[in-house]
Structure formats: structure tokens, C-alpha cells
Image 1 (tube, helix red, strand yellow):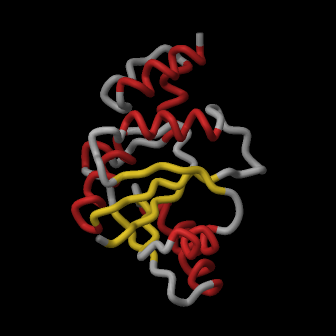
Image 2: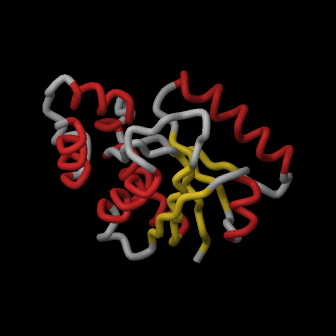
Length: 158
């Protein structure tokens, strides 16, 4: 089985992420969801909380594992012996940033391949930022996130 590494902040994971993860398991077999630690960002959920939420949300997928990591993605992929870096693309606006990141990663390790998957049409507009904003304003988020995330958001928001 090949290993796809799906890095991101996942703050929080939403149905668009889950759609990409589930389809990736069919394409590569194993998926490692890698929760990136970013010193420049204050996360809504801690890294440990995000890892746990993702583990619970993907518990029905026995070929998915979840870990957090610090440092360069290329080093992490090498250490974990990943076959491909998986990234999600929602819109054209995501492409420029993701393209730059993929090229930078390839310049650091020419053997590193990045593959982009788009979420299904019903999830293409979702982002963690939008989900948090809707939750903060008291909106219904049941259709956007797994139950475990909905409960965690409500708990944190009081």
C-alpha cells in the first residue's frame, strides 16, 4: 500500500477534508493526516485537540492515521516514507498558494510529488475559517462538520 500524507492545520476538520481523506484511501490505501504546528498562528483548537478530533472523525477508516508535526514538510515526509503529499483545492484562489508550496517542496526534495484533490461539489465552499465563523454566530453547522467537531465547537464557544 502506498502512503499519502495529507498535511494541514485542520482547525477544525470539516466535511471537505473528510471527503478528500476518504477518496485518498481509495487511491493510495494509507493516509497519514499530518496536523501542522504553525508558530505564526494561534489555533482555535490546540494541536492535540485537532489530532484527537480527526482521529474520532476518521475512526471508521482503518487505513488512516493522524499525527502532529513540527518543521519542514519535506523532512516529515522523508521520515515517514510517504509516497505523495496530498493537498485539497477548493477554488482557483487556493491554487496559487498551493502551487507555490508544491514547487518549494520540490525544490527542497526533487523526489517529492504533490497531488491535488478537489472536494466533492457539496463541500467545495467549506473552509475551517468559515465553519468557525458560522459557529461563533450561532449558525447551524451540522451539515459542514462531523458530530464530534460540532460538539467541540459548541463546548469551546460556550
